[in-house]
Image 1 (cartoon, rainbow, N blue to C red):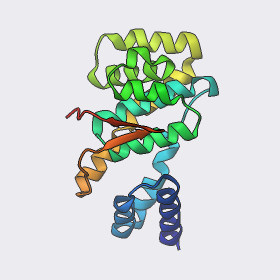
Image 2 (tube, rainbow, N blue to C red; image 1 turned 90 degrees about the vertical axis):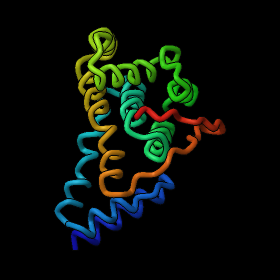
Image 3 (cartoon, rainbow, N blue to C red; image 1 turned 135 degrees about the horizontal axis):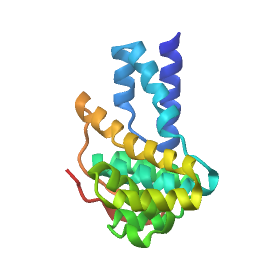
Length: 180
């Protein structure tokens, strides 16, 4: 019965975002308990903090995901961000390598990249997010920075890794550079 509900949830998710969720189905078929645990991961990764800091969260999730993937997972994050009302032009600027010009989305993007690389700039980004949006926004950006790479790494580990692909941000096609 649990497996049925997991399959239904995966099917709805895949349809909603036009996303290839075969790796999720594989996990459920391999182990129901693994499927349950995978289904709980959004409780962590989707903590977005305060509404006014949503763009920072989206940028952090995009930066982390792009570090782990150059296509389908990045497209999913872009689609989810657009659905939430995140500015398309700021998402596009980050994907084109100009995060410093991308407003709050760029702030989150640079935060996640600094957290992943453990650079000295991390403290500056953390302080700015905290000053402007509060500690819950820093927590949300940190969750995003640490969780965006989970799905691409999981997919590759399971043998479902995909080749790089272009990302659509509204009507704009962007070739996402591979960070590996």
